[in-house]
Each structure stands twice: as C-alpha cells, then as structure tokens.
Image (cartoon, rainbow over all chains, first blue to last red; front, side, top):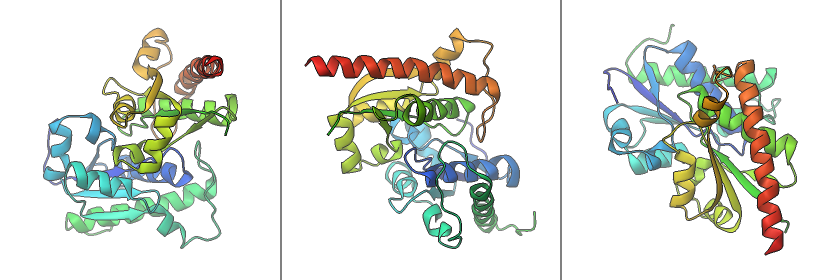
Length: 139
Length: 136
C-alpha cells in the first residue's frame, strides 16, 4: 500500500441489507470521484478483518471519516476496532431525517430523489474533508 | 421458519468488481430467488454483531467476492458461518473476458451482464443447497 500525505480516508459501511447502505456507498464514491478526488482515499471496510497489517495501518496514518448507513455504526466501530478512531462519523439515517419527504427504498439503484439526498450527504462529507485538511469549502 | 440461503457480497468500494458482486446478489435476492434467499450486511459480521453472526451460523451462506482478498468468505468463516459456496468475480471475468466491468456507482452494461451470469450461477447453487438440505 502506497501512503500519501494530506489525504483523508473515507470508510463507508456499504451495508447490503439497507437502502441507507447503498446511499453511504454512493455518497462516498461521489466524494472520491467528483467532489474531492485529490484529497480522499478509501478502503473496503471488511478488508480490516480479512486483510493484513497494511490495511490496519490505514487509519493510523490517515485521518478518517466513517460514513454509516444506520445507527449500528459498523464503519465507525470497525475502523476503531482494527485501526484507529475516525475523526468524524456521518450517519446517513440521521441526515435523512432532514428530508422526511424522501423515503429510501432502493438498494440496487437509487432513484432521482434518493440521488439528490445522496449528493447532499456527499457535500457534507466533502465539508468534513475540508475541515480536517483546513481548506475552505468553496470547491 | 423456511430455510433461506444468505448471500453476502464483499461490496468492495475501490473497484467495479465489488459492485458486480453486489449487483449479482440483488439480482438473486430481489429477482431470481426472492423467497429462498436474503442478504445481510457484511460490515455487521466485521464488527461481530451477535444477530448477524447467529444468522450465518444457522443458515447456509454464499460469499460473492470481488477480488482474491476474499473479504466476504473470510468474514463468514471468522464468524464460524456455514459457507456453502464461494465465487470470486475475477474468476468469472476470466471466463468472460469480453465483459469488462467499469463503474462503481453504476456498472456499465458489460459489468451488469457479468453480474447476471454470476447471479444465474448462484441461483442454481441455491437450488442445489436447498435440495440437499431437504434430504437431511
């Protein structure tokens, strides 16, 4: 694993059983691919258990943000258990409460309404990235 | 309660291979064998959630892994789950070289087609596993 400086690791739960898991996954990728491609990296959460010391060193080297689908907070707990405590945690089900008109139901492919909220969650993650790296959120 | 097969993909987020496994899982659980299968959150196994650990101990499981790191298989085994079948997307890709998957947020048509082939294979395994379980 090649390590780089000034990066924030984003670790999402990708929970298969809940639509919020898909939202956590897509929001994370939106940050990685579109919003903060130069400032962020990721690692598969299950790799902490399945992988080796390199993977577990991840959060000891990078500041991390856990993106969890539900209140069970697997990404936060898993990252803390195997690596190091995330600097911040974003819980999708909590943020969704701000948008009561959107009921997340898709887990295979998000619909337009779900995608809109997912982009807002991605923007919140990007804002946290900027805070951690002490950058202005004006990108 | 009717016996179900638990299908758990790795959902690897770094490459499209993880998305292929995830999409293949939903093709089985939502469309091909909705009554006979269900999925469970792999991260719950990673953190040792008691309910999910019990689920994989009591039901036959199929792991769909994106890459040779085999996160799903290893997490099921670490939870002492009943692993009945295991498939790795890279192996399926080797047999279907033209179906190169691209995209993590959304798969390209080739990736979706590859997921369909894996799903069909997994659905057949589900039938075999349940038929075998009935005999016992």
